[in-house]
Length: 476
Image 1: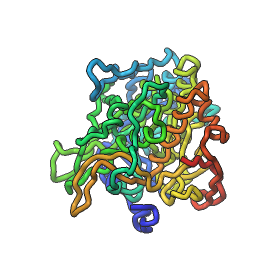
Image 2 (image 1 turned 135 degrees about the vertical axis):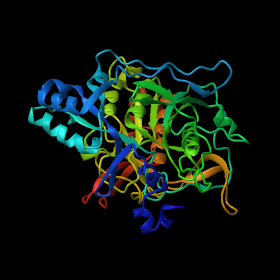
Image 3 (image 1 turned 45 degrees about the vertical axis):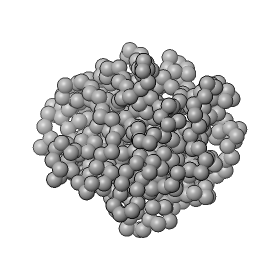
Image 4 (image 1 turned 90 degrees about the vertical axis):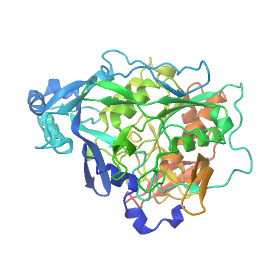
């Protein structure tokens, strides 16, 4: 389905993925002005500074919740490969500095949720801390729920519409890997699916690492399941399968001198009814799990994060803010100048979505295929850094039969800001691999200033924000 084919009803409707996720008993959600905030019902994210500033906040929190630990204490084990060449190992995990930004963020569990879940108690606790004088220069909250992210809980499907089968390319889409200098892109997404017949040259570029999820009841991390051809109760692909495979091909097409590490993050399970518990689909992730993967797998050049989610009352995500503060420290890879790119989201909204809205993250909105106006599905706002076309994007996909005559034969077109963002990640990687920039963030500076061999212009939109917002457009 192209953006022009999307009806008004489809734009307003909830995607099948979001509809399933909102029925999960362990989750709570709240809708406001077209934005759906989803969170773990019984878990809170707490700024440790509020505990020392406000005795009243500390007492109120201790009354209703118990501490699990700070993010620097809750680090998962070394990454596990899903599949690799003989003798291949995953690149090292990054270890944050002791008493650094990760120590400022804690996870707490509510003792019971019958009198109030995380979305209800967070504003009350936050007001207590603020009355006692808690504030931060960057506007971080004292507490917020443990938010949940779907790859894109979009109106028409996942991400913005369902994928459409496409024919094979007229010319090779991904070149064979070479021995020339390369850049590494780490993709935080659904994972990667090897197909048969294979995308052979793409397979050679990709290392696939399991994501990890935190059991807050035990404080232990567990490996995610790999991406696969998971089907729903109707026998159709779940809408997320192949998302990471599509992005891997897209990056490799734009930036031939790249190697890819794909971190699969799809562990939180959703019951799909008549098929029973063994047929549960893994359709969402938590912000702590995604931020943890960003931290631990930051020994790279570009981090392409495939997730976008809103937060309660639009406050910044504490886990992502802490991770980005750590990644901007001098001891981090590239002296703190790894590029982090994330999609703006597909809710036709001007509300900030995270992690794209963080100042140190490159947030990418989507235009239509012409590059002259906002794509109908794209979020937009001055919190975005740039835009490029995420509409009718073509790339590698899985092989899968559909009802009727249509079949996926390894190729698809898809719509969403989660396909605009990897184009920017690829452009940064291409500039860096060519030796034109000292660090990946220097490569981004070249691109946005029109010095990265990519044409730039400006796209303006006022339809979602009420007043014109101009974004730099990269023609990719």
